[in-house]
Length: 350
Image 1 (tube, rainbow, N blue to C red):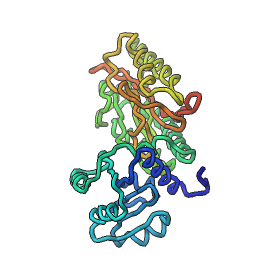
Image 2: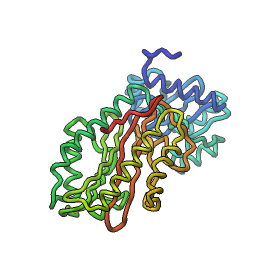
Image 3: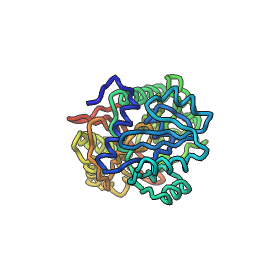
């Protein structure tokens, strides 16, 4: 067992090293800032990491060397003239024959360089570590979600006829920042009327009119961790069709939430939501997956859709967000972020 007084980042490198052993790999190159920050706590562009089963190295510009060493004493830091060549040389020197890089986090030029040095592609190593959150990470996501939920309660009564989508977006951002968020977790989607039928609508100068649907998809970043929430409501007196579709999406989301638990297939959550909507005759209007993981990125593992092969584990955080979109009329999406538990899930965006 690990010593849990150990720095969380040091534990993460240990976890990555255990993954290398399980996968029968000797080492992995870590090049993207997000993964480097996850592993070391040092958030700065311009360096490259190499992690083997027993050691970890950072290859940095000289101007970053002292700062890195002062913050990360569990990684060997050096300042070579050429980072990529130095990584390749270290691999050769240490006899790390099965060295890989993660293609989803590399650019073309660097990927071509690694392949030319005999490295292989292996995706998902660090993403797999990030999928299950430690309690301290879950606490940060919970706080991020609480900020977003509280901000919605403030902004909703201020959304009235004549306001533009962009004005709501700006104010909602300001409210979340005022509560401690560092910023939005993505470009907020504020959609009025027919725009709500576009799942990834870009907020515009379009003004809200009386008797229209309002869809707000938003979230914030708190201490590096993202939240994601969607709320749909009707400004004015809703017509029977909107009431019917809203009730349907609400029932579909509840069915999906009941399916979430450790050991459940992610695809089963999608199926539970989709079945409710399809049985009501609206299957063709549910035009995206049911959800995705959240964490350091707004979209990460696990993927909750019909093609997913993933099994949910306690500690994973994900969204459940079915929707029905009637082009030219309105759309309804209800989204909550949840923490997977052994017996079900904790809804984080209440």
